[in-house]
Image (cartoon, rainbow, N blue to C red; front, top):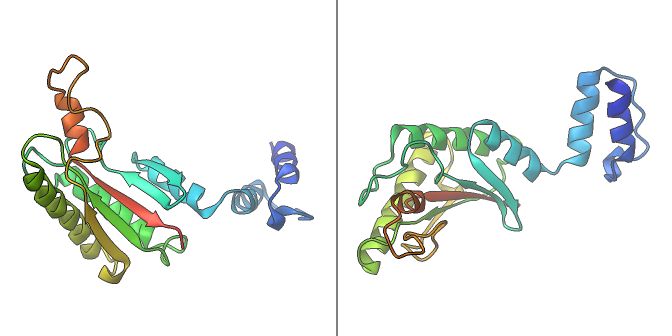
Length: 185
């Protein structure tokens, strides 16, 4: 296993890994390999995925989606977070305050499904983004690092209706969401 790890390390193209001579344990080898070859965004994505969150690296930073929770994040027409959503946001706050993310601002985006008027959905998505931001602050993220924006129904993750025009309750539930972006420094 150690030989395989050293081969991977030697093939890493990161400048920090070039010429690195290892005389250490397997655990230290893996830590050095990961820090040399993975970006901080990739490490953050991995942390969120280990907690069961959907996250991805984008040009803006790391996007964390709270749309795919086993329970609905928001019930229809409400900005009250489920207890599971609050727990996940608390985890996002903890990771946001660790050394890899502490200097990053956090963009909190609120969204709704397509039921209701556009004006109502804009207000509701604003309220949802602000509810999520409050949980971040309650868990140690300074409000100076947080920006909230809201989009109403304009950016669905999945269709609110099936292709035959019938209602898609699962799709609507996924669209009632908040997304967190740990912006690149």
